[in-house]
Length: 307
Image (cartoon, rainbow, N blue to C red; front, top):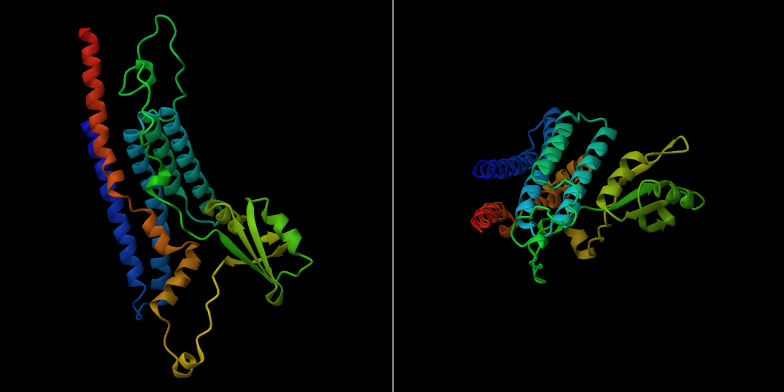
């Protein structure tokens, strides 16, 4: 158990290190003396690092989940399966964009093996009959001790919320084409809301989840042999007041402008992406709680032999 705990700590440290490296690379884009080739290399590295961070983050989440969800094994399995499915969808998204997915495939397999080793992919155990072995574990139903109503179970959602945009914009769409385009994108996910701006011939589509929006963004670029002009939605910037406009002077592109271009190339919101990988203190402590759970199980198991 101590060896497994040490491995999880190392993974957490590696995750934190990669997040810092990603932030450092983003800050390098602010330098004006970078060549186009250097910027492209940095953007490519950020994108690759983001995929590795996401995969590693899910491994750490699984370990924390296993430690804090022992009192709800069924829910733990469901969350683990969802985490693996999310990672597989990430893999599909990267494959559709023509990227090298060798490392990502490896991470998916590692995630599955990790979940399996933690017992999160095993089928739910059935109730025991006469003569069946007694189940062991703190608070399990097999011991006849009901779960407390106030038990707090850790989930992926409690550690991180995905605040990245779920809305895409399709340009050069006529009113007659609008319904066909909406139907076309409904094939890749559930469109929660659509907004058509007639004077710009622009259609804004909001999907139920970020994952569905990514799939639609990557797979829906062609409609009836025609290449669609798709981009991530950007909220319109209000025009400056007359007084402010009078004193405005031309300036060189600012850091936010550079970062917006990077975000568009990566297909993500960098601020939300970085924030998503940071856990609250309670979640980070979950790995340590895992040791306590196993120690109590061993103590109870030892007492059962004495009885």
